[in-house]
Image 1: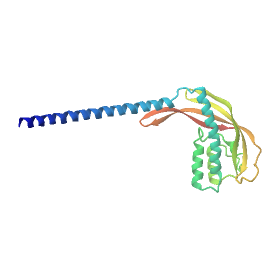
Image 2: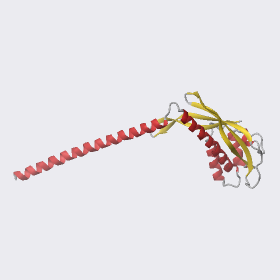
Image 3: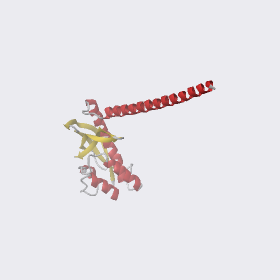
Length: 212
């Protein structure tokens, strides 16, 4: 009987100690997971949050601006084509608008071949394109950096691109509507605050600006 009591006591001690060990292991594992998550967030923050971009990073921003100008032309081609489904046109117009620093920038040169002459801003250009369509679409060619991105303040860099703008019929078999003309467009790299889970990080984003 004494042997049975001892065995029962040993089993009870093992269960209690085992449960405590399990709880301690769980707590340690949870703490370690929290530490890893925090380290991951810090790593991502360090990767994106640059207080001052390097020369190489500024070059990358300039190349991004060149790509965004090309994207803008592609989006506006879709938004201006009345033969395309309205849903796709609206989506393209929305994406085109997000490429610019604001809807009030001067984009008059983009509408110089259109029927109306008072399409002076990006908002008007997009609105008219969706409402009435356009007879032509524009292509920027030979895009280069005219003025490198330079610091304006602690959260803004500004520069300028040069390109040749030509207009063409939606019917690709016809010759270009106009001879390519040399144009310029402002570009910006702006530091903005973004939400990452419960944390906020500052990232640099590239935008297009006024055309001339």
